[in-house]
Image (tube, rainbow, N blue to C red; front, top):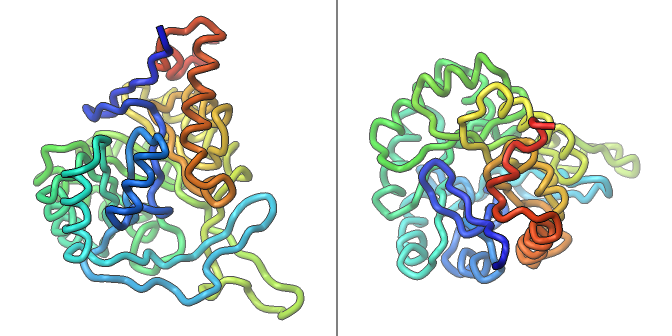
Length: 305
């Protein structure tokens, strides 16, 4: 019998624990179909806002060697432009689609979430942590009262699970308790870390936005500690571990720390979409070699030793 990689994420059934992280692909049916064919267990869309956003001008992405720095500016077609893509994807794809939602206040979050739920998404991820777009993301999440109102507003119209995408600065007991009191169903941790790079040739910041978000293997130890501590404090909350997953081993670390599922993002820049197949195959081999029947046996296992 082959190893069982199925997991349940706040009521969403995944054939394996790998999820396309928000912000990488996932704004068109064609891209989402490619991710499904690559073997992902689920898809998180790019963050969708009420109105279309072009994002920032180039340069918006830098390979630092030890990680990646980006400031895309939340480019997306807006909820009206994305609805047809989501409806088509839900009609054709067989894996869950979690819609990432961004907004400036609770009314905008609620409006976008309601339209994407009506279009058929399987869950909502609230972007409360993008570190480089004024008025969105981390600016919303840093205001705990506002973030709590956003969660309540979306939960008030959603029968589907609602997740909070948080930064390392929000991975604290008092903040997560407030989110739970507001009705959140799960947490995705962490988003990119606010960072920058300066060119010694031009003597100026490299990114057009000056400051961006750091991702890749360099933030994995930070993200891993966040997941470990969140699971220790809140063992019953479904967690999605995000940050530096670039192999089955790094993905397994997050599961052992307490994540039910793992988000894969910037590794696609180096390994393309084959990272999903590599991760799934590696997890299967590990389970078989070590005598585990299901990946579910390993969720939070590091806390038992």
